[in-house]
Length: 444
Image (cartoon, rainbow, N blue to C red; front, side):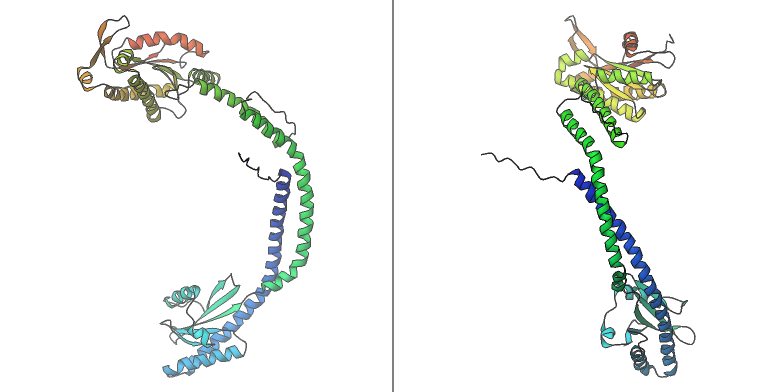
């Protein structure tokens, strides 16, 4: 028994629109709330920053006085420790420590701080300050935004302004919980109101665009089934109508693409006669100056008869690849390459590039085609095969004749007119021994 897969449940477009609008509203309100909270925190922070500066000045003064009154080095750590205890007990600071120039803690407000390892910010700040040649500030600060605290580093200098010790203390800058409590209730009410309003707005908006989108969805499914002539008629006067018009343009392009694909050469995958004619007609319509070059392989039939159809296909593919290389190396980005069938190719380029492009192509073609022959034929420079009348003859190695027709010096009104001129130019090119390029220079 074959189990039919269950169709996954989909969320409707109207639900998505409503959800998006609610989400966007929530983001905006969150931003508003953030501003309000920041204002509250700013007030708290300003006060705490002032308190921190005052406490820092007092701490620096007490520590420097303690150092100036301590004559013996061995008494410095206990003196500093007592000073920190006193500052802590008087509620001037909550915590702190003092290190020497070797980064060893010699005093702290408690044993835990004394034994604790440096945090990454402490390592960075202590190394930065201790490595300074000149102490240019009374104290240095580091703000920890994650914990909303400020670390203050106080250089303790000798009489000749050399750094002796470095003290550190921390202050809380703001009370986030208190700030949130002050703005929570009014912001919550506003959030609910805005969500409700936007939900109704989203429902109305989704209703106005759902039907046109359903029309486009049905049309897309029918076109994917092969109904390329289908067109939609959406009259909303806005971007949705523009989307419908773009959709109709897309279906027209698909019809052209299908025709081009059907006419494309199965061997080289290059555009065929339909695409060649369209490109020429487009350039004529746009008033562009161009050269259309037709190619014809010389002695191809003899090569095909001797080496087989597979080898003949290789020769045709080599010709296509060489044309691609020539366009890439010596042509324009928008040059056109088509394959009419058999050994007939078409290149459309500009008059300024045609000579360089054809010269490059002939050079590379003449370098590569001998590799298609066996050693014996390549050395002799010819092969033995029957001509079209069945007579055994000598045929030289393959060459190529390129015939160009341009509208640079005269008006060409259609692709049909070009095809009428081309045989005569081809005949002149094929009359030249070896690979050649002939351009029709006639002005009438």
